[in-house]
Image (cartoon, rainbow, N blue to C red; front, side):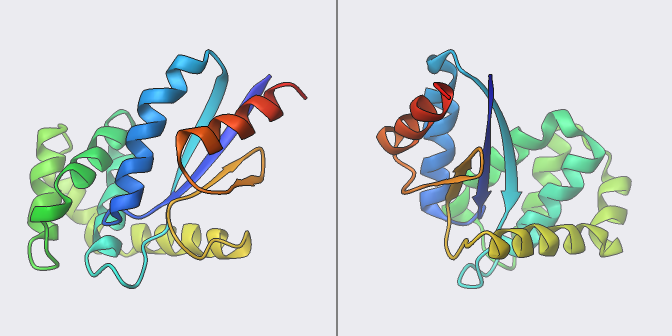
Length: 160
């Protein structure tokens, strides 16, 4: 049976960076069939999280295969990004991932990606997300994001 893991995350959140690393490292080792969905939930306390999420949605739309790497670039560069530099960093990361600059700029400026991020955040609100990272497996909230907590839920639900 395939398990569905939905991750509500914020690209400026240090805990989300850690969660992403844990999931990327540990999930493949389980042998379980887990379908992962990344949902943007930029927190208001993080000034550049929303523009980064909008940029990530544009990459997801323009070059889906580059989406995870693009998000990882933001996670890996959290300490060096500011509200003033986030757009330039997004263009640098998109270029490194082979995303056409003109299409990327058009997407960023259209407002559609912003609406998509707002819809993902509203979805998170509707299921009780109040902070990040917030993980759900088959609709069940995982308390915490450490591997023991995640694995316990995966193991339990994989037996059903």
